[in-house]
Image (cartoon, rainbow, N blue to C red):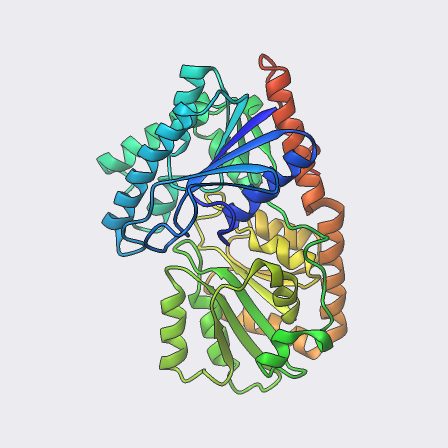
Amino acid sequence: MKVLLLNQVFYPDVAATAQHGHDLARDLVRHGHQVTAIASRSIYGQKGAALPPRETVDGIEIHRVGRSLFGKAGIAARIADFALFYLSAFVKVMTLPKHDVIVCFTTPPFIALVGRILRQVKGTRFVYWVMDLYPDLPVACGVMKPGAAATRMFESLNRSCLRAADADVVLGRCMADLVRGKGVPDDRIRMIGVWSDQEEVKPVPREDNAYRREWNVGDRQLVMYSGNFGIGHDVATFLEAARRLREDDRIRFAFVGGGKKKAEVEAFIAEHGLESTCILAPYQPRERLDELLSAADLHLVSLLEGVEGIMVPSKLFGILAAGRPALFIGSDASEISRVVVENDCGASVRQGDVESLVAAIERYADDPAARDAAGERARTALVDEHGARHRLAAWRGLLEEIVGNPGRKSAPSEARDA
């Protein structure tokens, strides 16, 4: 097959969608397919154009277009950067030779419109990889009003893209329900969750972990939030838990990564004098991901209630690969909560339930053996069901089916994902 991937971020960017796109592309190349990726010349959130316009990496032909003029200077600035990427990506897509199938992500929002047009103009098969739902996400976070004219327009645009795709790939059961509610028939919906690679991310023993030494954690229980502190994530609940546990010398917290709410985390720590019990660090290299995730004894994953299904945090699966328990903060209807509970590899608490979160952290501090057993179950869940091997096989099967049998529609199946 000739496969085209379209997303604003791609290798060497560290954003989650860039990493998953790179994983998929490498796997397709390993299985004899030809893969082209179109992405931005800018690292996500940074100004300028630091990346080469064209290069071949791991057998993947990467075309980079546009550039970020403003970074994350504000909503209007980001819209301007998005518009430049839309235009330059569309031109590049239309000038490339025909591909068998295009996979459109959701960064920037509605870039799937390019896939829809390509399907109409060139007959290229079109798969919509629904990482996040727009305008559902800004509405749920209070950035857009539900009944506003712009919201209705964007909702109509997204529904048209979902319905025009040969397949809509969703990340969990709650997201499948939302997409189905937008009028997409069941035979267009395929559930293939995000993943972590069990070979790339392996548990690193505490005594060998450089991060624990660097941060002077000692034998204390380290509770970590790693990744994006985005508008759809609840930070207030775990920050208050960190404040309440400040006098417990058995416990330390680490907040690693970036995003819109990272400044809120930093301000809270400074305001409450938590510098001695809370570690702050930026995003870390992917090459050290297993060591980073293994540095923690417990990991935090959060999602604002009302956002479940609109987005599905990918960080859980790296946590499972590292063999560490996860403490999820959010609705029990979320796919993340379901995975944690079904595999008994941590705990799930509701947004704002600081008491339950503190109790879970203290319970694991009191019983390291139970904590380790939960971590072992986490690793088993990743290897048996949620690992890259299973997810990438599902992706190959889907694309080969669509290209080889263009008139045949696929039924939704978690089994083919597992």
